[in-house]
Image (cartoon, rainbow over all chains, first blue to last red; front, side, top):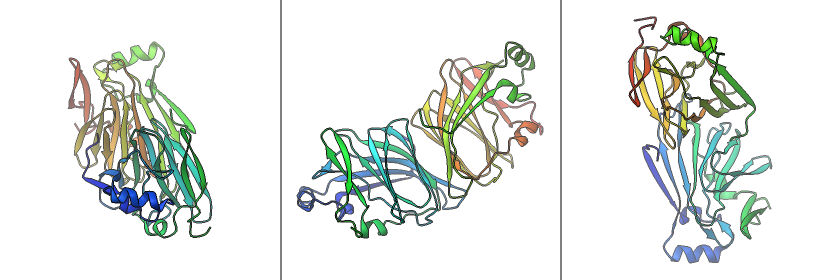
Length: 176
Length: 176
């Protein structure tokens, strides 16, 4: 494990409105609002020459047929990139820009995924039993805009299919 | 292995003047100028919002009692940081700033090392038989200043000691 300065735990309640199966969501909430993901950050001054890095750990699980995932965000300084390096488990990095483009890149140990400047991104654990662990790096002054995704969701969702997954349109996306 | 756009191989001749044991250096050169390290880069536009990342592979070996290592560099935009994440093998990240400060941080799998803005850095493989593999990330416009280190060397050197290593003053450093 890396040395870290800050540990965040995000429970299911932080993803309110992001899952299509509201009955499954309410059932999990009633059972205790489980921890969906955790972030271990190495903090640095929020300057353009500094980098923030750390580990993201998305636990295995589903809400209905949709996998556990992060809230997802744009950067506040929108034209700043992010890099993810797979450490453990299997996942999908779901990305979209504000012009309608989207991408779903698989992440696994020793594989790097690049989030270009201007793209929102969300990590999704597509495994059955293992944590999805990624090492992330972005410019330390980039900041997070969670609000846009909280309001409109992502254009796409990732659903279980057999032992794998499929990407589908998000019927609850603000523009669908 | 990551997908990469560019593959660099650096032979011992690229480290001319950096090793104290010139007889050992010349002997290795006569035996064929071995490849000391390799870099696999994911290229991106050289913009402040982009990141360059990739794998650095320092092979195991020594020149006299000094280990195989990278050339080492400052960034051309000097106040830009870099992050290393250990993938395989054991190494030391040797760092120094232009004011006389230095640091030697161990790197090993799943450990992250931060190079603060303004610090020159060099990766050194302290293992006997295994490659030192690290995943690196820095701002894509940072650039490389190799010349300063080529001229003056690092203040410190890393030498074999028993099965481990020790850090010593560099007797050939321009300011010693």
